[in-house]
Amino acid sequence: MLDEIESVLNQFDKIDLEGLEKVKLLNRVDSKFIFHVSELPSILNIIKSNYSLLEINELHSFNYETVYFDSPKFQLYHAHHNGKLNRFKIRRRHYLYNNQNFLEIKQKIKGNRTHKFRIEKSGEGNIFSEIEQEILTLSGAPKIELEEKLKVYYTRLTFASKFENERITVDLCLTYSNENIKKEFKELAILEVKQDSMNRNSGVLLCLKTKKIRPLSISKYAIGIAMIESSVKKNAFKSKILQINKLLIDA
Image 1: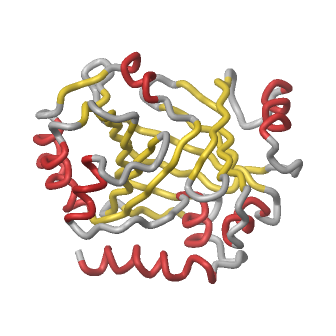
Image 2: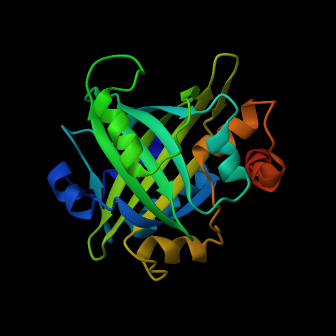
């Protein structure tokens, strides 16, 4: 399967980081889709003329490690679970290919709009610096005690539309871990479409509609916590977890 995906990726025009910066989209509308990885080569083959693939130093797949933070009683998780409109995720993202680290604060506003605050981190460990504390305050994130709750690993492909202000990310080889458990979901692909405003006629959205792959509003953090933490509420996520498990069973 990976060889088949790689064969299609080699047919894409390439874009570098400078070109990708033109579609940064820190304030954006997100649409997420989850499907079995076996669907990916066909999707990529259909959209390859409309999108360019990010390539850095002849690499186009990049490994990420993300550490998510929450309060001891999972306040940020429960805000998502309970459908709070103005909610936050706080994470450190480590780009393993260039060893860069960022503090990222994602604010989910009404509807599908997301605003992301981001600052590069220097040094080791997960202690928040004075500047990072200021960014957390300025972002409007809840003033709560933060501790590491979940690590997420995946490999990402990034695409930029040739015609629209739009980016696509495809995350593969998803793995969750905490102090007690590790779970791998290597059969899944998570595709996210990021736009400045909703355009349902973009090439990738039309492709997914034709293939009857429907949006699934999903947070890697929230679903990960629901799947590996026994102490949290998860009723609101049961249908999504069932959909994910069905993808794995039916494949």
